[in-house]
Length: 309
Image (tube, rainbow, N blue to C red; front, side, top):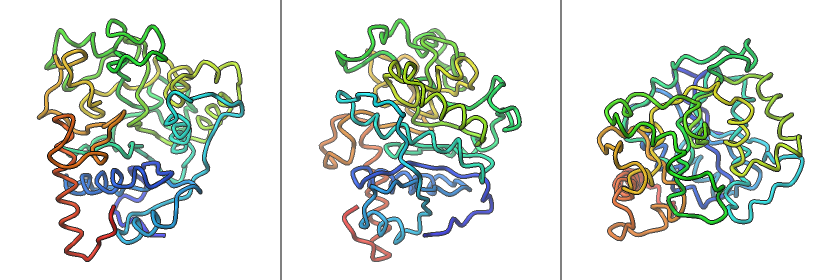
């Protein structure tokens, strides 16, 4: 296992990886953190489904990694319409990793465009409060506009109920502050979570995952659980820390979107940038990913790393 080289071993970025489908995303995420001067390492949290070729790719690039248990509720929840949500429960693992003082969990389909190390010092409740305070974790809101009009999404997922819609009247404020945690449907997006690991909080999460009645209503896995268990008691970050690519659309939040203010873009939903070819991107902001990815690949070639990822 590659060892993390950092002056801050108690604070890390983490990202979950279960297969090689998202590996190019992870490698480019790691590159983007380093390019933008982060002082903290990215730790890949892999499950036992992660194949040997993936391990070799991480080890070759000296990206530290750690085995984590694949988490699922004790009662089966059907995500046939959105299979990606089966993996999302495991994004709750960082709450249990008490060997660290601070963890910022990132999705592997993200790209860091500006340094955001300040998240490592953001004020949150200390673990001793055991999840009873008003700053249990930090995240940006989920966009509940249902921009792709998916028919199986909840009926209340409409622009009128979106926390970001409440910010349209003051776009400049939206760049630096999030809408209150209770705004809109009050649901955090699980793509970026700022966490002070806590045994008590993780026990609360695990207990809720064993509650069949609750789990049955969690249409969005980890983020549904967190919004239910800690409703209104989390810190809402500006969209700029988890800029969902669909928020740039005029049908959603183009009113507040500012390209130059984005610190971290989230390429949620399909297609992913790496599913396309450079120059044939479906969305303008996919070009940002390809610029970083091509830089990464060129840099890796100078170190004789050419493995197709």
